[in-house]
Amino acid sequence: MPGWFKKAWYGLASFLSFSSFLLIIVALAVPHWLSGKILCQTGVDLVNATDPELVKFIGDIYYGLFRGCKVRQCGLGGRRSQFTIFPHLVKELNTGLHVTILLLLFLALALALVSMGFAVLNMVQVPYRAVNGPGGICLWNVLAGGVVALAIASFMAAARFHHLTERVANFQEKLFQFVVVEERYEESFWICVASASAHAANLVVVAISQIPLPEIKTKIEEATVTAEDILY
Image: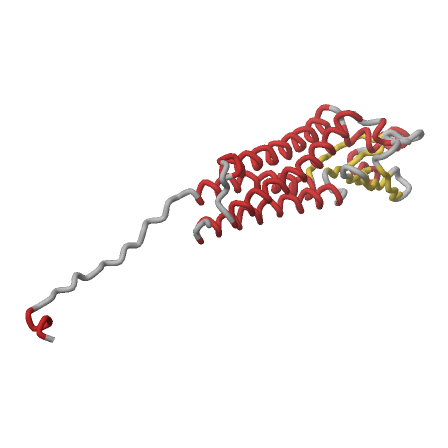
């Protein structure tokens, strides 16, 4: 059985892995990966709007990996509409890259559970095989954190190099053309970053758990026998 010191750190490692699992689920469910301001370029050109009037043609958009929302401002007030990525909008995006991001995050869910299982195993017993010990915990956390980081990098590439927001904003628009004037990453994106950070923190936790504690030795007093003790 591992000592209380290692049990505490392995317990923390399992908690961090499970937290990463929950964070990824939240990031998948909440449609707030990216938001931005979209300018109705068609409306601006029709009325030849100047700088002070441009605010009337700037709407909002936010979306996640499965759905999103858009507010169009084309000079006649805001019009709110919701949309889903599947099954039609994904065809306008880089389909392969978008599906890859989802597959990576689903894989990260499985790896997070495996890393938690290894931490629990080390908390309740000392594994016979070294691969199931601290080295195994580190291996699965490196894989899980690396997969999440790869998904994050893929999403950033899609947003930056494939003009993701502009494609989403102009989906099924026949009369108006929208231009993205501002973009920012939202909470779901940063939740994924936190998930990857949890696995990185687990590496530190496992390293700390291997620090040997100093042994506490109790001083044993030597018994002295005198002649008087022998008489009694």
